Image (cartoon, rainbow, N blue to C red):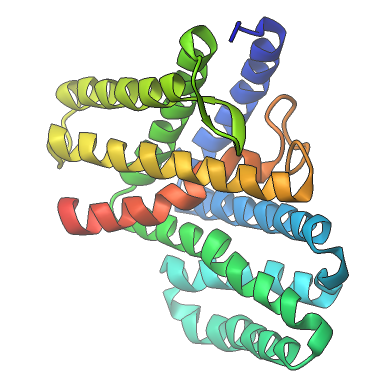
Length: 272
């Protein structure tokens, strides 16, 4: 597969702006991090329901249910972030519980059952990873940054390796992905993280960082494939048009959504 240089530079330009916003949100303070995670959550939920509308137009969620999910996701993030400990009971009663009441009501309406099901699934697919990302931040603010950098590293290296030497398709779900690119991306990511951990003093060993990188790279690849499957079911190329050459929010954070729960389990079991 020959390198498509115009596409590469378009993606590169968008990535530079995207990275600047991400790094600012990750490194400024806990409020910027919460704002970043909340923004990711809202954009992903918005695109998720658009995909559901294309996949199952007959059972697309009503607007009130869509709005409830957008408001409710912020409630989850505020409640679990521990940044608002003095207001936990207010947030829980004013935002989270009413949302579950709305979901339960939707389940009683025949035409809304599918929509309510999509909403519940979106919690595990979209909201839970963001909650766990906040938990990682509270354990060590370096962990979310490294998690995202590992995903970027794996995606970029897999793309480059696959562009130059990729020949064997990985799966029909994503025809452009190759075994050479996927394996090469994982190996080079592990090497990169090992070199970084060797020179960087942290509370964790080199092997712990490499183990985390392996979990993130593998789980992130499955996250990419899952979102590709949703797009194929919806018959769309991209989930949105947030970034030229990169698509929408789901296209950008598909790996993060699946990698975060596995990374959290690894950190909790091995690194804490």
